[in-house]
Length: 449
Image (cartoon, rainbow, N blue to C red; front, side, top):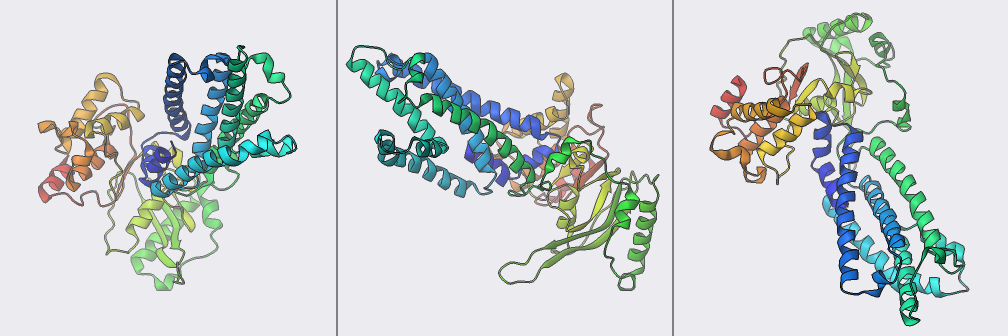
C-alpha cells in the first residue's frame, strides 16, 4: 500500500489525475476501498485456511472477536499507509523504511514487548502507550488470541469469548479501543497532511486548509493588484513588455474584464542549494490572453517556460504574484480551473502496465463520458494521434517508444474536447513541449488533428 501511494506521487500520476478532473475525495475513497477489499480477501483466506487445517488459534477462539480485531486492524493499517505516504516522494526510500518498520516492529514485539506484557511489575499504562504503534497493537492482539487458544486447548475448553474481554489480564478490549481511535485520528491527519504537503511535486495548500470548507471565491482582480508590494522597474523593460504590463494593470482594475488568462506580476524563485544563490526562473511576468487566442512561448533552455507553465497548472506555487484563469485564482481555485483545462505536461505521466486505450478510457470516464460516446471518444483520440491501427492502443505503455508515449499524452489532454463529445467544454489547453520525441511526420499529423 505504501509503495503504491508513493509511486503515484513520485511519478506525478496523482496530480495528473487531478488535472484531468479527479477530486481528492473520490481518489481517497477509491484507493481506500481498493486496499480494503484486497486486505479483507487476504484476511478471509488466512482465517479460512487456518481453520481448515485445524489450527487451534482460529478454531478455538470466537470467530466474531477475530473478525472485529482483523477488521479494525485492516482499517488502521490503511490509514497508517496514507499517513506515512505523506512524508515520502521516493518509492525506494519508502519501501526500505516500510520493510524496516515491519521487521523491526515484529522483532521488537517478539523479543522485547512480549516480556513487558508478561512482567506483572511493568506498568500497564506504559504498555498501553507502546500499543499506539500499530505493529505492537497487532502483536498484542495476536498474543492474547494465542494465549487463550493455548490455555483453552490444554484444558479442553474454549478460547477467547466475548465475556473474556472483561478479564483483568486480557488486553484485547484496550487494543480494540486504541486501534479504533487511532484509525479515525490517523485518517483525518493523513488527509490533512496530504492537503498541506508539497512533497511529491504537487502544490500544498496553506496550513489550516480547512478554510476550504468555506465557500471559496477569488478576490476581486483589482485587490490583487493593489496588494503588490513590488514592481519591476519600467525603465528596465522593453517597450512591448511595459505596454503589456499596463494592459494587465488596466484589466485588473476593471471588474468586468473578460480575459481567458491574466498573469499579474507572476514571479518564481527557486531557493539555492549547497551554498548556491537563489535561481530566478520567472521575473514578474504580466500577461493578458483573450479568449480564442493561441499563445506560444519561445526561449532557450532555462528561460523559465516550464516554470511558468508549472505555476499555471498547479505543479508549483508562485513565489509572488498570481494569475487568473477565467477569473479563478491559481493560488486558491485550482480545482475549479482543472475542470476547464486540458494539460499536456513536459514529461509523460503514464502507467507503464496499462495500455494506451485503458489510459484513455480512465481519463474519459473522469470527464463523465459513458456508453457509446465513451467508446467513440477513445477510438477517435487514438486515431487522431495514429495509435489506433495495428492494435497499438491495446499494447502496454511500457512497450511504447518515446514518440508514441508523447502522442498518447496529447490524446489524454484532449480527450473530452468539444470536437470529440458534447460532454466536455474545455476553455483552454496548456502544453509544454507537446511534440518532443515525435517524428516530424507524426508531429505534423498530431498538430492537424
